[in-house]
Image 1: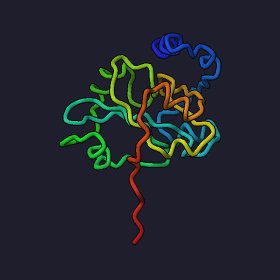
Image 2 (image 1 turned 30 degrees about the vertical axis):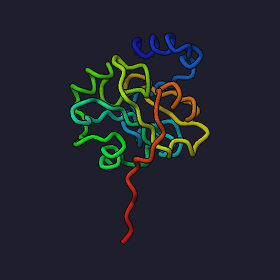
Image 3 (image 1 turned 135 degrees about the horizontal axis):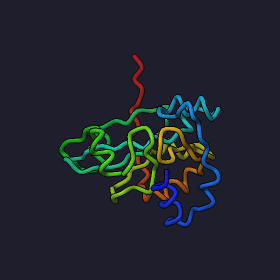
Image 4 (image 1 turned 90 degrees about the horizontal axis):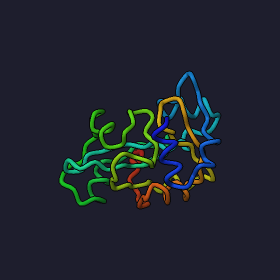
Length: 159
């Protein structure tokens, strides 16, 4: 987690380091993290890397929802948007899938944050590995991630 701790220091967020919670059993998925923390699934902030016309983009989404890639495509004006492969995620962020934090990445990427995150006072996000998470107010998280707030959540269809 050194890379993330270094990122916190660079962002002036050293106080956040003390709020990181560790779960030896893991918090790799949103469901595992919510169960370990004891919070609602929607209070988990997933950091997902997509490839928009081959260019990595980070999408921050609440843990109870899925990203609608078509809405991401329209938002970015891209021809094609797909989930990034594991090696691209690690190369872009410096972290493995399951531990990607919302900021403090190896490279600067465009960041979209779904509006659903703003419905909570506090959300929990990965802290650089699949066993650690940290709490933050969603507005602060969006600010530190340099994110644009958008509506890219997949809408559930009722028949």
